Structure formats: structure tokens, C-alpha cells
Length: 401
Image 1 (cartoon, helix red, strand yellow):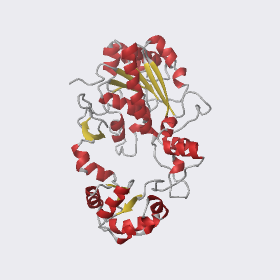
Image 2 (cartoon, rainbow, N blue to C red):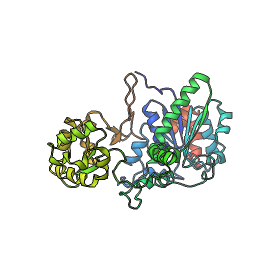
Image 3 (tube, rainbow, N blue to C red):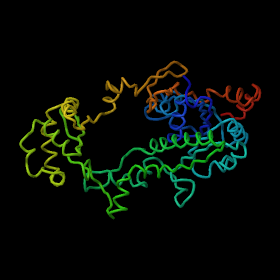
């Protein structure tokens, strides 16, 4: 069975997280993804806090987002390295980059320049705020983009100060949009022979996930603020403390039938018939009291037990898993959400599997991430046709570096 992107080549200039994740997913689908990096400016994802060895080739996070790739080293501050990059792009189908706007143009590798080298090239740029506009020059990381997109303003306890997400959500959200865009561009090229340039502003990808807040302001003139775990139309809607140390279960009720199912799961306590909870509006107005009553039941059960009881009645109830819970869960294990891959030294690393499974097309993590510069001889020799002496000279001059 062939992989859907077998035969395609990707030049991956991605740095840190967002763009590398696109490359990793394309590699899962069979593309030959060549990561261009340099010892002159290390990819910091080779040195995350989980890398206890401080070995750039053994970082768990780097293996997770750069799995299945090849690695070459090019010092892009050297003109010869730029020329080698262009030669590689001429033999590629897709270029990925997430430098600040203007950097690729400075290197002479903006889309218009690359089109002259290869007319049907596909290029995707993942900057914080896009390639043009008043904010295009802003330097941003994932957590700061949460604030700019308005996402952070909605995260916090109800009617209290903003807490924010405290994580780089755009580093994951943007690449999922990016993979879809690249696949659409490849499909378009197959149909028309035309390349494409994809300007993906990570902040705009984030805005797309808060549609309810946007519509609330657009249609009603109201600014959605911090709501905790409550929901404007679904009640109950919260995380409820369970038996055990910091164990919780998430419960959400939308319809009258689901409310009756919850009452049945709780053994129909008398308060279920209280007039204060007779309809969704009254339940919403009295949601704090309702949450306390539900908690009295959930505290008597561990999360999985509570889930089994409620799910049996048709209630949307799921344990709030921590990383260990998720890693050891039988469902995620059976579906191979996490898989072990060995690097070229034979050392195992656990990585997240491809997040989609196709009925007739294979997709899977092909291998672990590469060592830095592991494939220099293959790429510069076999693909670009340089001989051993020339490669050695370029290494001595710290062009291949």
C-alpha cells in the first residue's frame, strides 16, 4: 500500500514548533521532508526541559514534532548556503518556513523569487500575524498570540480577572490549518499545474476557534469575558471533583432528555424535581447551587466509575485526564495514540501518532527525528550531485554547518 504523498519532497525551514509540525505530518503521509537547520542558530526544540541529557539528538519534544524527517545543516548567513538551499528547492515540491516576514526575501527565497526557479513550487509561510498589515512586523510566540487573538480574554474564573491559556496553542492549531492548506495546494497543482503561496497568519487561525465569541459581539454587541467552565446554554456544564487526589470529571448537559438521564444516573435525588432546576434558564440562574449538589455525588466516585455510570444513561461525562492517565488509558493504547519509534542509535522515543486514520490509505509515523546533519551526504551528494571533496570543503568553510 503506497503512502498518499510518496514521491513528494518538502524543504522544511521551520524553526521551533509551528512549521516543523506541518513537516512531521507530511512525513507521516510519505513525503520526503528535509529539515534545514544550522549549528550557527540551533533549533531550540532540540533543548527543551525534558531533554535531561542536554543532547541535541535526544530531545523528546524534537522527536515528536520532527519525526520522519531528514536533516541537513546549512549556515544561511553564508551566500553559498543560500545557493545550496535554492538548488534543493528546485528539486522540491513544497517549502515550509516560519521566519519573521521579510527574512526569506532577504535570503532571496521569497515566493516570487522561488517561482523563477520552479514555476509550480508551493510555499507556506506561518508568521504570527501574516505577511502584510500593521501587525505583520510584530515578534510573537505562541502564548502571546493567544492574547492578540482574544482567546486569553475568555479564560479565567467567572467574572474574575483573565488568566489566559498559559500555553502555545497556536503552535498546534496553526499547523493543522497549514497541513490542510498544503494538501489543497497540491491537489490544485495536480489539476492545473500551478503552484501556490500560502500566507498563514497564526493569529487568524486562532481567531477561527472562538467563533461563538465573535458572533456574540457581532450580533448582540456583547463582549464575552471569563466564564470559568460554564456555558451560556448548556447547564450543567463544569468539571466536578471526584474521589482521589485532584481527580475530576467533566459533565455537559444540552437537552431535556440529557437532563433526565443525568438525574437517573444520580439515582433521581429529590432536588432534581426542585422548581429551581425545572428548565434550562432556571438551571443556569441557579447553576452554582446545582454544581454543589452534583459534586456531592461525584465526590463519592472515582472519575472512571462516574463516567461509566453516566455514560450508561447517555450523559456526556468524561474524566479530566492528566498526562499519565492519558498515556496509560486502554482506549488510547488500543488506538495507538502514542507510538514508540527508535532513532538511528536504536534508542526508543514515544511520539504522538498521526491524528487521523484513513480507511484505504496508510498514514503512520515512519521513523524518529534525525540527528543534526544526519543526511548531509545523501542530500548534498545524491540529490544535489556534489562530490565528496566539495562537501568536505563546504563543511570546512562552515557553509554546511
